Length: 490
Image (cartoon, rainbow, N blue to C red):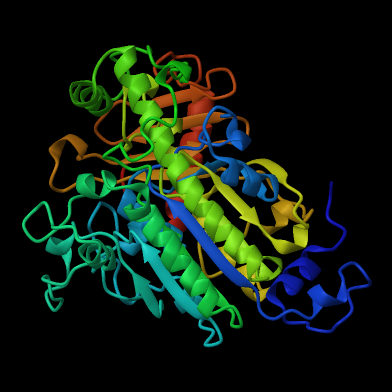
């Protein structure tokens, strides 16, 4: 059902810049006179798309995320820019491709002169905070336009800028100390130690508490609050390990897919590593998936508390809620685990936007979209102005009834300087008609028909039957590279 107001009216109302101005009776006076909209941006680490009912999983216990999805615009086919933490985080926060920001592999700090959303918005009326995992350099120190900073990770001290004090610890570290715990690794708490605490002392509950405190303190001011949960990222266990019965877990349909010789050697080697690390039989993988689901449920509970606090404080009617993840996880697909590959399970993520003006009615968007579009979308929702200064395009027209061309989605993989196994370039394009081409400079290339083979079990690249499709999609990749200044040769 199309909205009753135009795109321009929609975003102008969302931005609150026409307080008191009539919109032809489409919205109540109370909404029309509200202040600048708030932004609550919630994201997770390593959460694949099919971890809530909106994406087909009705077995996982995620009532709060399912409720949020029912009130949101749900993007069915949302993709990362690069399927690993730091590179894709840089794109989500800045709207720039990893090869543009320079964050092409993990633990490369985001340059100080590259702006994140608060800096791009540049509105002093907003109170801003970042809470949770950052993984873009100087992990526990406030930066990039965020006034308040709540940190949870102490594993990145080796990557701090030389001027930073490496003896300082995260806010979560001090929380655990106050609860009477002693570090299990010299002067630090490991992720495994934190994950084994009672649920009220784990990282999601800590972030939930800090987020709700922020909302109460700034209930009368416009705010931008980012919350990044580490879960369901490894170590793949937590206090809700028994929340889901492994016998109720369905193995991925492509679990038994054998990666033939025409699949990338890099992927085949990673598969062998994962089998050694996580186990080789069905029981191992079912247990792993059940624990992974438990971590999603753990996040779901904290998200529920935060959203209920938003409601209780009377802020929900003027707050944009955004939910996504930094990448997915194979979690048994192709008998692989973790990320770093171009298969759908690693590159597709949940993407939900709840905008008050949609009046709580969910919508499903089937167009392919990219997380490179997140920052332009947020800037338009917050300012009522579209921007041409970033490579992505606002998603607002997709849920305001605007005329939108079907988009090609692009994904990149860049070499890891410290790991020869990952020393390759890959550039991927996904077409509106369901074709997916992955070009590599030194490894096997891939072509999949996602409509007929959604599990990507048959690589058609060397079949000799799809030369015209390969040529068309290769041209699209080269055109994209020219447009965004990507010099990788694939």
